[in-house]
Image 1 (cartoon, helix red, strand yellow):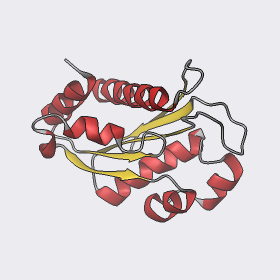
Image 2 (cartoon, helix red, strand yellow; image 1 turned 90 degrees about the horizontal axis):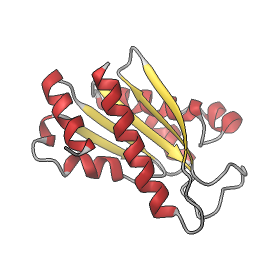
Image 3 (cartoon, one colour; image 1 turned 45 degrees about the vertical axis):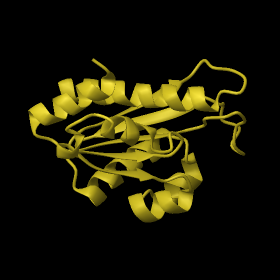
Image 4 (cartoon, helix red, strand yellow; image 1 turned 180 degrees about the horizontal axis):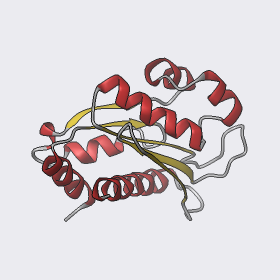
Length: 159
C-alpha cells in the first residue's frame, strides 16, 4: 500500500480530518492525498504558501519567527502546521518548508534542507530532513520531501 493510501485509511479509521500547509512541495502532498479514492471524507484543504507574506497572512506565522529563524526553520514549520489546523478546523495538519534547489536562497541554508511538522493541536512533531540529492535536484527534493512528510504523518497517526 502506498503512503498516501495508508494515511487516508488511518484518518478514516480514526474519524479524523487533515489539512496541509506546503511551501517547497507546492501542493504535492495534497495532490497525493486527493489521488486516493475516498479522500474527500478526510481531506479538508491544502494551503500552498510560498511567500513569507502569505505564510504570515493565511497561516499566522509570526513575522518575528520569519525574521529571526527564516522561512526554512523548525519554528516556521511548527507555526505553519498550527496555523493551517486553526484556519481549516481540521483535526490534523502537516506542513513542509524547505529549499528544493537547485540553488539556495539568500540565507545560505543548504539545498535539500526541509522541516516537516505534524500537529493535532495537543502535540506537534517537527523533524528536520536533509536530502542527499545533488545537481539539478528540484523535483527530486520535492518528491522526497512529500514522501518524508507522508511517512511522518503516518507514524504520527499510529502513535
